[in-house]
Image 1: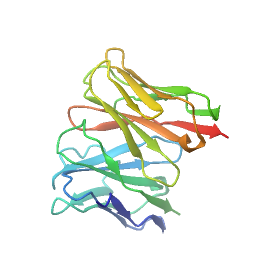
Image 2: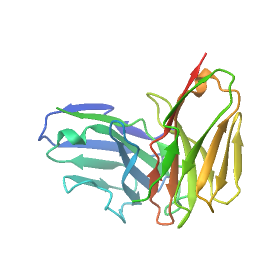
Image 3: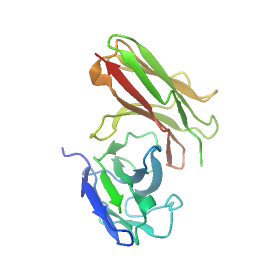
Image 4: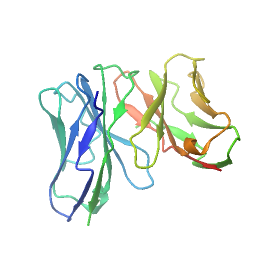
Length: 116
Length: 111
């Protein structure tokens, strides 16, 4: 079946604008994860969803970041009042089961965000 | 924040050489260790998930071992090929379902 998809693939925005990033997980996958990779850094865990709920939001870098998931499927990551340090590749991943951190995660292609 | 370290940061090898790199992670509160390969312009691709001390996994020319007591995993590539060029990421996962990734080892195989 189809893999994880993300949109847009690239986004250039001006400082101070809001952006919304979208993730479509693999159908039937109940767990969904957001990560980002800033230049020269490793993958930074942001948030994960079990179904529609996010048990732990402590990985979000600031209160300008929010995420939601509806219908146990699509998730959106919203960054308000973007700053230049938000420039990064934002990756989404999904896995089959909830709460099973030995499960393989399947990654999307990422959204490359550039804040000017 | 848990510290997952990978070494070396980058590696250049000749085609046909065998190579290995290391992932170090906290030995406490361990649940699973994941290896991924991330090629440029593609999505990270899962290679292995290991959960038990002493686990060894193999996929073609690539294999991995796990030592949870001392907190390390090795990834081995036998007879490297140019198509093996990628960044190899390891991730430590905790029972709380959080994942902590290392910064990766960038491998370049020179034809």
